[in-house]
Image (tube, rainbow over all chains, first blue to last red; front, side, top):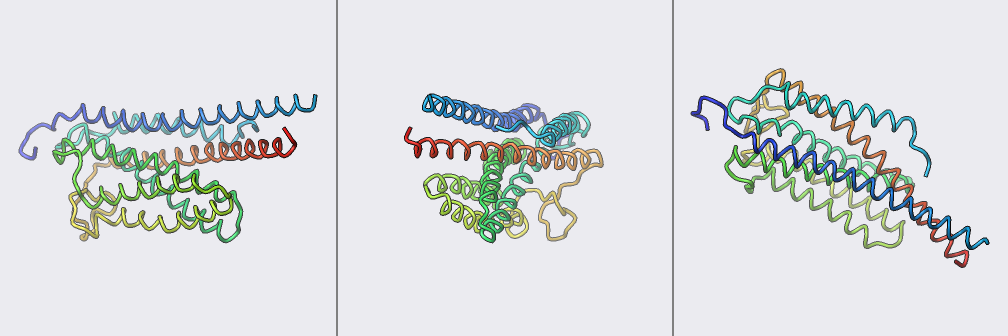
Length: 55
Length: 235
């Protein structure tokens, strides 16, 4: 590598690196959004239960 | 759930813009490294992710200290939220480093002190989340979390300093002109701009994610409280 004239051809590793970086960040955000959605549904369900109990 | 605060909306927008600019800088503005080629571009986000991991664990340790001093559960929430973000970004740091190492060191993994200490740090904080889940009592859980975050924090400076304390092949990025540094990493001004901008952008990403994660924790506690109230009400 150190005696070469042109830079090493490492484009595929760069692409793989950015897929991992951006993919992991996207997964974190999606997981956060899904947890929000699940909790909102739980809250709606609890509201509904409370209303039916009062009736 | 309360509507999203204006401050968080603004932070989302600023972080989004910063992220797009950072991507442009690292992929197009920064020059191709003369020896390593394109894979060197992984370095910008690799270090920035490592920085977010360290910052998140620092915040968790400080939150632990404040919780023990005041007993306010809000600080326990901050600690847990910060650790979760730190785990994700340390994972990015470790895997992207491994991908960079394959063409440069000719191996995906080597038992280098930096790689080992970073992985041990990651495992320590994964254990923090797992062990918390096994404690029912909220006060005990928060107290345990606080003490664990403070003690676990010892792994952060050890990871940062490992490339100076031990013999290693990992490049020294911060303070590479220091004669005690065993490796060097010289950057052109354009590379330095992309690097510093990436650090700034990832700091904003951390702040944004922390705010969202804290809102999630508040919502989660609200749901738990409602469940208890309904059960107590005879439902």
